[in-house]
Image (cartoon, rainbow, N blue to C red; front, top):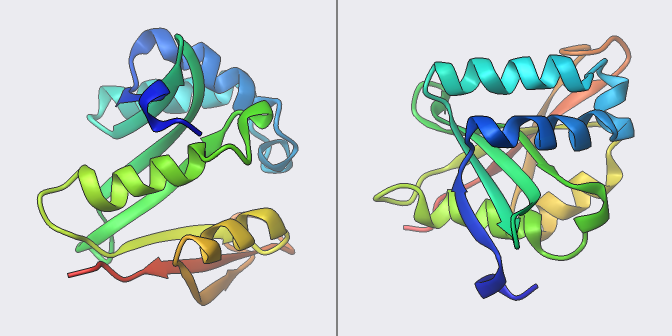
Length: 158
């Protein structure tokens, strides 16, 4: 991916429908009962509460997003509760660009980052491992019965 062609910016109200539509069309999110309406409401609520949600776009087309909680892991470290890339834009570096932005550019100093990955999501596990994250634990039946959420951690480079 040509990083110069991709712009990262804060999510705006006008972006919510586009993001919610591609999230709701993704089988992984559907397994968790996500609909375009429920996700639009979640994004709206996030914006209203001051959440840090960054989108990646090129030529006014939204490619993906990342939601970051600054002290969401153990009231100390970064936590990424949600990250998503439009299904037709995967494997083009969008997710890696969003992660890099969170890890290195959003904050004044390097920070450890945590996130959860569904145990059945082999593509995501591979992606995060390739980007320096390690599985450090699991939460059985945390969100869905019969599914473990795997805890991934990336130590900050000091």
